[in-house]
Length: 161
Image (cartoon, rainbow, N blue to C red):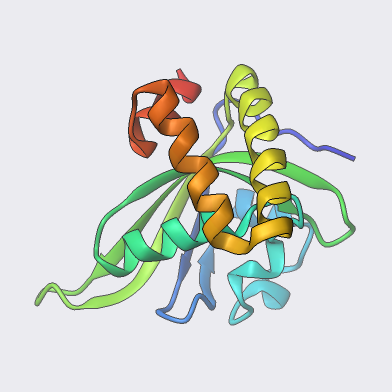
């Protein structure tokens, strides 16, 4: 069953360099269905929904490991198997010497129209992935972006408006 964020909610979490959760705000804990003690030091992908194409996470990790941010629509699963959609901004955390020390993500309610469009795209990317792996999914994503005349960042920002 789908659960929904309120429009003024922000879900915040932080991870270490290996993706292990080091912090989650109240909304993060509530939406996940887990207790805080179950989330802390657990891998963030505990929330990964099987409807998410691997290429989205490949792009995410490439960006944040290079100290760049990324926006993405993400479908998460809860402890009891329910799911919820978010529009996420994921960013690298650095220390005073600009050394990478972890990652943080701030999520808000996705636009309904954007969510509908991304669900269709993600289903196509998953199908391509099943047939030809992540490279096939990346090829389809790039074809979709080229057809739209935008890069990935422009695409997801337009979906959120």
